[in-house]
Amino acid sequence: MNDFAELENELRKLRPALASPFLFGRIEEAMDCMANGRRGDPARQPERSPHNWLSLGFGLAAAAVLVLFAVVKIQWQRERPQTIAKTSPTSETIPALNAIENSNSPSKFIPAGATQVVYNARDEGLHLPDGLERPVRRVRYQTQQTWRWRDRETGASLRVSYPTEDVVLIPVSGQ
Amino acid sequence: MALIDKICTWQRLEDKDREEVMENIASHEDWKSCFSELAPGLLLFARQWVHSAADAEDIVQEAFVKFWRRNHNIDNRPLLYAAVRSIALDFIRRDVRRARREAAVFAETESAADPQFELDDDTQSALAAAVDSLPCDQREVLVLKIWNELTFNEIARALGISQNTAASRYRYALSNLKKSLQPQ
Picture (tube, each protein chain N blue to C red):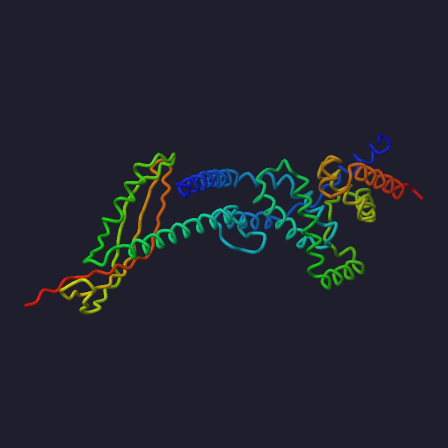
């Protein structure tokens, strides 16, 4: 390789052409786009999040929990005797929240709130159910229940929201 | 409770992701110093495939932004040069007709092409012309070795060849240059 040492030195004296000042500006713009997560040309597109599959898994798990809740609720309503009933939002949410509070899970998620929003109430008129002497007014409530948990340490929060439908039988007294 | 555990794992990943974002923001300004050092060599390397300085700049810009976005670490230089090469080849394939037209124009009016080097005298002009006349596989190794200061190992990784092949091509390049520069 020593035979070429002089030639190598001569080659190193050749200076490649410098980049135009506009190139720096263009790259800076692309870097800013990247930092802000904006979409630009293919070179500037933000990298696909590596947590997409994880988010999908999380979403599926949440959906599975909702389906489980729905099945349990339907089963519970079928097994419940046909008596005058009124579903209270607190009677359903508080035990569940207490169960999580009392659990031995290593997670630090604590209940942060539960809401029930009635977005539709339909009066289905008077009915005379079997086994009852007096007629009852049947009212169907469609609600959206939302539970929230919060991890105070990390600030992460979990929210589970699902629709419910309650049927309330109100006894009618004769005048 | 299994769901909560899954959420905790997800949360940990989120924290890690946040750290990466912060790292990215911290290193956002570092690219300028890295790029100012590497830009002339990168442009020269890109010019092996395109005749126009503007096209070479487009290629280098795309490669550097991609590289910086994914690596944030300039130590892995072979990857950067591999990206430049890959994007340059894509560039040629993407617009073959344009490349042919440019090649034809370049062949006809060679002096009109953007200079690859800043030349001080006739000796350097002759040397630059000799470099330009080298076979492509030898020239790219020479460019990576001399003006980008990559090791043979790094050149091998950048070009997807063995280290021995890289060294051999470099020797052939120097030998050919010496022959072409010898007085007739």
